[in-house]
Image (cartoon, rainbow, N blue to C red; front, side):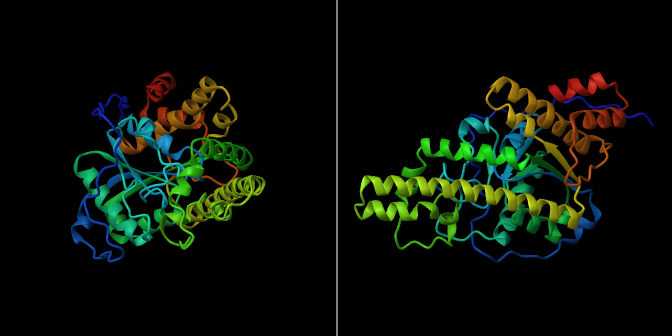
Length: 351
């Protein structure tokens, strides 16, 4: 049977802003009902795309790129970005970066509460159901692997949905350099003032949004400032705090990467690794960096999702730690599965 490749020409409904979508249920900690609806045994599973990766690798960018090419909405799975406030410290996407794509579970939770994996499963499930009912694709994006693991371990989700995982990866050496630069930019953007506004000497840094990297590290500096320390002392403490933020961010990236490898081995997920290292290496040149991103990440990811949604002819790439899903590999597989010339596959990916 001849399979004809379906061009990527779907229209996206324009949005005037990227204001977070109001959750369809009120947040109540705990209480997730794990009952199983038997009707899902007898229906075709709806499809869900996950965009995963360590902090700073471009997960949100890829999710928004995909949502601008398919009728899709983004569900945040970053455990700090679900809270209201600390937009700089938690690195929430801006309205401009959202490009009108609706985002769910972004800045909706009281910053002083604890939003658990169970809470995420409950609210994410409601958001996903809402997106699917409107014939749109849910794209789950974020670096909190515990949330992603919990959702895929949730029986109701497994029976209703078929997942596909896109792993945006960057070599640790390159990523460490990038996140260090990003912290400097966050400081320039007002990180200190943002953290200072919510500083409370009696606060518990193990609860809510105060767990976010960038908050506990500033504690000693803010206490010294409140006690009238000298400018020299404050400058020293601030430099130390910024260095600690960079160190902890790099450690987080390493832990997240290790967790992704463990989850992939344990679950044998339908995972595709997209190496964005070259795009990050070229970040001093916007044009070259954008071209590398499109060629190595956004283009191949588009082909993978298109195949997943419309013919599923592209074989899953189960990736060991050293292997890279290259543009050529993805485009060749997509062209072969659709029985179209390579030129047509490349053209479709670049649309």
